Image (cartoon, rainbow, N blue to C red; front, top):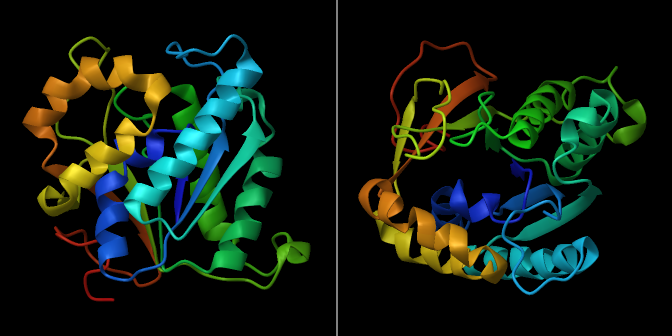
Length: 236
């Protein structure tokens, strides 16, 4: 299960992991909190609602390319997640974790990603809380039977975007080789036609650094020392 903030996050950040999982027959579920109406790149949209509808369709097309089993786009307001009550947003994610019953959850790091986006940061907080609370019977008992996911991963990085202030990324424990699916990750991003200027702007960066996605194991059901892995499902 992958929890993101905006359409294109699913491929831009997590596309390699999602495509690799699909190739192994692993069911995947992407939950996106907003429809991206506050984006600087707006394609041909003349209004926020029009852009939101456009980006919903782009998100669905991207998930199809990546082989995502199930995807969902919620109705929170882009650029305003810091104003959403934490309990309310976490409750929604707890319900979805209990329903989908993932073995692994992945989301942004607490730094907000390479662009330090506040929406990314809030999604990280909520998904992390939901990971822990979904397995606890006293938390939101009306949201279904408890389910404890085995592993929680945060996305991190080994490079910075040249035109953005650098974040403070967490050191990684997983270096995921995505070369076998890098073409599919790029094709998924191309489905986000409204964001073509962003793709063009960052193409050289991802040509150079895009062979690997980096993740950090944040929590697990079994106590264990920190160690390096090359697979999110290693040993499972």
